[in-house]
Image (tube, rainbow, N blue to C red):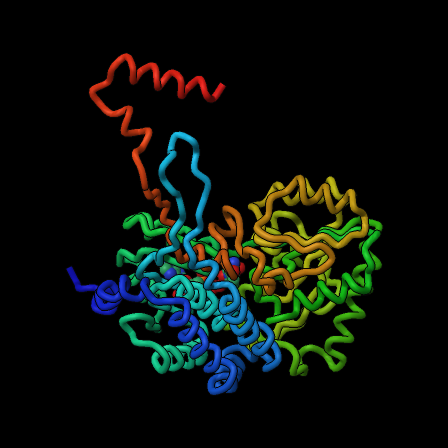
Length: 468
Ligand code: NAD
């Protein structure tokens, strides 16, 4: 059998993981600060340029969605890590008298982080930050679709870390597959639900634990009580940021018949105000990552139109420079790809519903979303939508911003993901919560050990009666 090309890297980390797991709060924070300084100063401009060259990402969006979240996460961790690392004392039931119980937070060991292309820095370094905080060794494999950004990230990692502790490998899908053959202690994957299934299957061979941060279709519900101008502004921003290539972008809108015309008008006004000379010449608008994804979007749009859908705004594109105009579309049949597949681009289908009940039914016919957005002032509708659906995350009267609060867990449910990231939840994803009991005196259980006798049985009976 051919040797695994990453075996040596993996073995080197296996030899170090216990040592790295014993690092103190100060040592972990000093590693995080090195990364923070590198992103804030030396590598900020190279990263902005790399992301611009990979998919025309505006510098401000790189600062906002790639650099800022990591700096904020590190700051949050610095503030709380000492407390998170401390063993937590828990209660002791009466039969365990004479002992103390506590949870120790130990590193998982050697971890694999596989990331997607849409926020390549954020989605590679954010889990890395959690992994470092929890005292792990890591191999990172970013997406092959952002080669310039992966190259800068590789330079950062090799400048800051010893490869026997943290290293980054670049490569295509085959690289990811080769890495997945190794018995990692934890795999943190961010990407599509389809690939997530392969990751879970590969992880099952070694029973590696997994965090799967996946995607899918995140709906927005808008009713006539919502403030249309604000709703349109926020939805248009959520759909245009990164040119709609965001796991939590509003994928489609379920809008009540009474609100539809006002919402469409407000969205049009908003898009014109975001891009007064048109999005194609705007420096505030990113491009689609590559030709394959551009064609996928073209196909979705063309086939929806051929099935009777009507473009309300936009619809323009240029394959040559990967530009795709922000587009509003209605009358899309439910079985069209636009309403079946994750759009991951700046096309926003408007689906008309009678009321919140119909929206609930629609959402519940689909796989569970990563995010669910409600735009309404009607408390009953907000409550109904929340209580009668399941989603990984939610925002009420806004979208996308919830993932920037490090106090909140971030992640999906079932088809949209397994496990949570960010802040304390990220630390826990990369930690084993070792349940520990320390016996100080004689134990009541010692009295019930063989050989069994009538007296021991009576003691057992008395214990059971105690529950009555
Ligand atoms: P992807 O699933 O195609 O690829 C992600 C990573 O997996 C890449 O590093 C790739 O090399 C690797 N990969 C691809 N095929 C593989 C295979 N068969 N075996 C092993 N590894 C494989 O995702 P993408 O196109 O890069 O990103 C878009 C998807 O990611 C969308 O579905 C989006 O919703 C999701 N996403 C989720 C989050 C989140 O936090 N939940 C964030 C961003 C993106």
